[in-house]
Image (cartoon, rainbow, N blue to C red; front, side, top):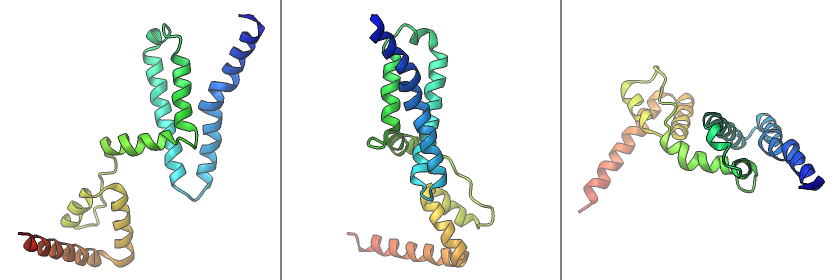
Length: 162
């Protein structure tokens, strides 16, 4: 293969995969921690979860993957798609797959009444956080008034339909 092939392989081993899969995500994760924005936190937390899954997959199926010469390059391309800001692949996977199929955060504070807990559990996590902030700001009675107004409006809408 010659000296160029050896140098290219060594650069790939030291700069390519670790740089794309570890160094840049580590740097970006540290920046995300320091920023006040939560969107970048989601991107990088999701990346690390997906990277962990890839690593577990790789460890579990190492003997099979060793026979596939294109596996390291496929993994590199997938991680580049996850990492690079122009693609935001990790955020895409979170929004379109993880968020739809993995329900986390189904606990509601015990300080709410049973009817309020029931309504809060029907909401998405983002909506629930917004409602909980509303309750903190205006109190549980304001939340009950909003619920009653929504029920009244829904009933009125049903009665108007033919």
